[in-house]
Length: 603
Image (tube, rainbow, N blue to C red; front, side):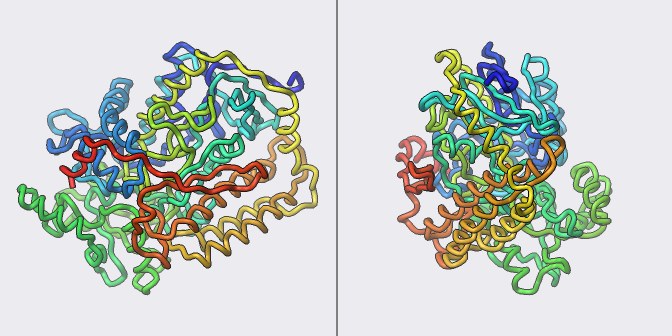
């Protein structure tokens, strides 16, 4: 270990997005030493791409909202596969986390009487998303950074973690390198919090930034932790489709929340052609209570464009396949129509959706105040991840915690828009709090040099193959295959072929090589990312193949209906003694009687 620069902290947080920053702040507040590793620069976290808002039942716009309704919406959206302990905690604590963020300096949009403004979003019964125009994630990161930088947290920017280090069954540190010079680092810590985000870079079309290569999920997997519900991947209905250089970049649901309509090439609002009975019943209930839904009204409480993301994405996919798509393989999203109903519509759009206005103006040459956007589904979010305790966020490996997108449980089979940002705040805080408690309770573990040597040798292995295949080519092949065979619509034949393809890609990845040296070598970084991407891709494919039904973010063309046999368990993945991937089905604990009543009252 003396050959490598070593850093010691009580708590090590890997990932500096919303969850990582919130965990670091909470751990530091508990009086322990905190190290924060970020793969990119501080402030570059993918959280900034979460634009629409933070879901919290503050009831500032509709006083019928409450934690009970939010809990019920989250459970229903997740098709009742959620960790209901997490769903209850999330619904109850989200308002306090938003108010806390406001106290720390976040500048939310306001109602006329000065309260935090909330907007409609898909799957939420009432306007629930506290927002800052369409830049909510950016404001969250700015606020957490400004507050956290004064808490005595040591930040390691542009560092990649390649392995977790253990003392027996317990995690006691991490091994990695700085991306600029390629120098190895050893981090000793009493507890580790994973907050590394998602797996979107396993797919060809994604809204995710380059960092999202499944690092945390793979680190946890190799450390012996369980992964759960990896088959549930959310394809956001609206990403940019043109020009090709920006394909997949997110178009916030806030556009639809502000009245945007989805249209096919015939000018039809095709979402009216596929409305679930549950939606129809709720519209009827709204009407009984005096909340009228009128088609074309910008203040419509429940437009069909705001059905859950999995449903909207499949409807768009169906329109494109039927030949009713836009010229570049998507559909049209029109917010400009509100000029028929709203005075000064262009100014309103620019005020409410400033990022979207500039994004389309600069990247696509489209003025969204006067013409429709072209949009299509993009890989956006993984509901599955590291299996954690609902209260403490500790994984099945002692000393290893996880929060945010890297962790499974809260969202079940499908995440509701806006629940991601409140998830970061609620469970980032809890992960940091309980990691600090764990660090205080247990003394520092011992890291033997053999672990370090193995990790270093593995990290350097691509240099042993200077004439090997380019790792970028291998990653591109993986992305093409996952997009084609484990995408929005899945079949057994496609996924079986994907497993065969993954086996071949593992061999190609093991033979991929690079030349040059460790300094400023992006090819090396890509070669190391490949192993993580292959782990999460295999976990997603095996889980999806096992679940012979359609539910939430998992849609099987060969099993299009929900099946009762699959409604009572989560899919759990673990690394077997032989190094292979093992899958089991694990029963969901029975819902508490009082929470059953809450759901029944809010159907």
